Length: 89
Image (cartoon, rainbow, N blue to C red; front, side):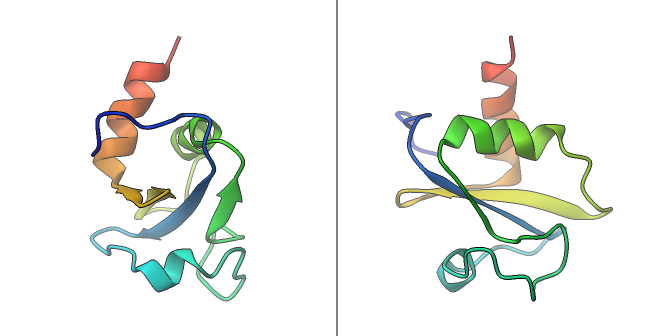
């Protein structure tokens, strides 16, 4: 994960089964209701900070993990966990 992420830049949140990594094409499907829940998946967000909080505070379906793309950076579930711990009040 890059050190200097802008928390106010746009982001795309995607939920995938445990152990599956996203492809660039999957992130481009914005709001595709054919992907498995939660829907819409992937989901665009105005700000990275909002996407991180939503990903950590939503109770996802079992075995689903969040991935976030912001700019050219793809944040893994572990990256999202670390950023959430830093941002929590």
